[in-house]
Length: 452
Image 1: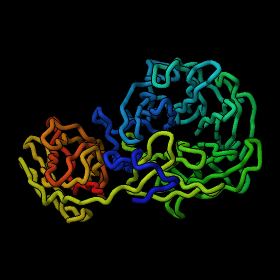
Image 2: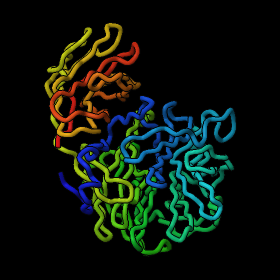
Image 3: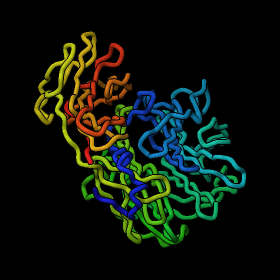
Image 4: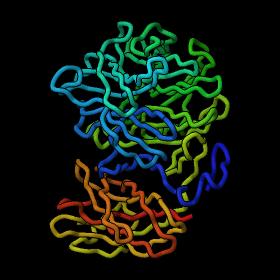
């Protein structure tokens, strides 16, 4: 394994937890058995717990909920509830658009303040909206929507500086990206602080900002479309000016690994984590998350792609590459019911385990799975799903009752769905993938199981 940013005592990265992994672009199942629905998200950290606030796209393009999830490890997320839900009419009514919700805490008013992009279904309004709450994941009181300082606002973000001052990061097609100061209660914009004009074709959206030491880092996406984002960053020691030229931080031509900036999580005074959305514009509920560690040296930021990676505990900047994985092919497993081989030119063995679930209760059993630890680990299930909606499976481990795992639409190359489970040390572990209810499960290409 490689340890980045800083070295931690071995007790902080015990082998029992070191293989819980973030899998960029994978189906991310939560304890309710559904794919994580917190798109365009922002994060807060309180008392060692992460809170993620984002868009619920399970109903498609129109507003359903602003969801809040909690986690202590950045990997296992539990839905706590909705800050706002669809109403019968008004700004939060049917056929409305709510995007990129962000929350910051106001130390003076002791209120959590939520800002979001508010719009009509044809994006003709270009407004922001504000709500407040008494707890980070509680119910919020909706206040109003408006155009900040009389100008359109589309993609937006929030930033709270070290001195407690709050700022709106807002973009519109006419004036470009702006930093706007907020009132002391964070409920109103007061004045422009800085504006990136549009000279030289510099058009950016999806802003997110952090401060490391004395330096501000602004990240944003070039306006190149839903699925062709080239994200960039700029730095300054002052919000009011002196910003450097925009630079790319991911590999050239990678389109930031097919993702768009939504938030940057500060993990220390010299490190952060990039949070991006991989949008499926024709099927937004199937959009996934690309989270990757940033390498920061002075004012230089770089980011590499990983199949998976292991985040450190809250308050520490360390992360690890995942342990070595062993592949267990679906076609070599034991079939039950009428599960059988299905040709698959993109699968590792050119076939996949198909017809899982359904009326004939097909299943696939993987025996003799090895683990070098007794403890929780992340297994990647490589799969295909030719439907336009998720499929589900009940996955049982070592004879337990199982858990519902989601598998988003995936055609062409096999995708990954994550399974977080306890394994026993040795080679006596068994994993069974079967249908959930009477539905069809995914076609399973293989399991990728970490070993230390």
